Image (cartoon, rainbow, N blue to C red):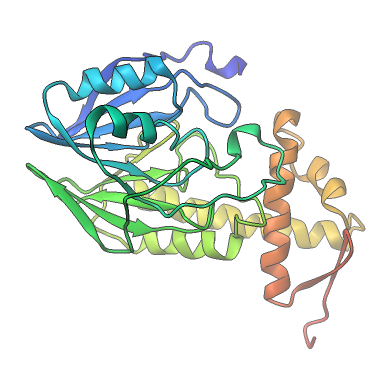
Length: 295
């Protein structure tokens, strides 16, 4: 958290960041959320949408309502249902009457290390958007872009009028996403990254945490390369005799804050499961070994 000291954090204030887009920052900073969850209000006329309403913190909910002003909220959109993203949807629905749309409901017993990554058990969507479906209001259209991987129900929202994409936790400018099995899936995550890379019409990403991504395809290309590099590291770790996740993480993440090592271990496991599907490794309980090419 020391890295956040010199970063301006305008909590509970609506900031104009782009045409049709305002941002409200929730006061929930952490090693996993950076400065906090960024809620976006889309639309400048009489109808707006709220994307990733965030935690059900009264200060944050009030700040969203102030940003909305006299406009009518026609949709409360959630990219996924981790507790730093969707819980404020319920009180916003009560206060505005707007439907909750976007990702499907999903609740699991999270066996990962992140308290803030637990799923929101109270999330109840009025409408689940499938890939390519759209919602609209005065002057704006949001298209759902299914991006499973970080979670199986993750969806991004593309603002057709400007080329902006609200990427939730799928792509962030400040950090890579944690992919934590059993729900997080590295195979799906890499496929979703490739899907975004192929969308040449997108001009900027607005993630739920961290700064805007001004060169989105360049970043996504780098992210895919980074994940492939992690694969090669894991294979080399196994070859060197580090056959458990616990043995690999200190070798692979020496320069990373040790508070993040448990989460890093979940992504290593996700990579191993992907490599196993591709018949490059096999497991023996908690230990992993390489498979010969003809297996």
